[in-house]
Image (cartoon, helix red, strand yellow):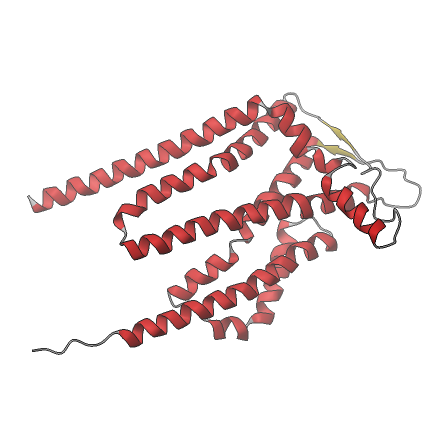
Length: 280
């Protein structure tokens, strides 16, 4: 009876996991369908927006330049390239890819809820509070990274790469493949959201005892070099984009040290609070 009960409990657990994955996949598909339905608006207002001179980031920079007395030096009148599609069905496939990415982003709150619904019942009240906070912190940092990648990193990269010219005669025009542009926008945006999870990764490593605040402080310079290398990997090959990614990651690393120190102090306090039970 005991073995059978454990086996049934395990099978029920797998069944619940299966339905969690199914519901999450359905949510992504529904989000993709919704995004595809409004693909024209999605492309005009989101994907292609950083290519236009009236994008909000360019307008803010222009206003800042005028406020600082630089006139129109920071204003952008033309990004300087056009798009082209070289494959049959290329625009349709681009539409599908963008819709899939948008569907994943739209479904993320529901997917996180499904993850919480699956693991929550097996945790103690204290553990539920800790894990729930981590899940929502992951969502917040991911969305913060997406916002930074889209509104700061993407327009700056597009402006630099799109207006870059070889020689002095402008003999070579920039006619960007649509897939290349979409890949740049989506990769910069999503990967920035991923790397913004750094504080949570450090916190997890601290709690399992792999790193500590002293270790993080000792190897701070090494970490900064690693951040520069990571920024060079996920950004286009220009120094401006790498700096724009590196600066918030440096800040997140310092925040990670503070979180690690706090977690380490709590761990030490918990160890000191354990009183050995004397055998009677």
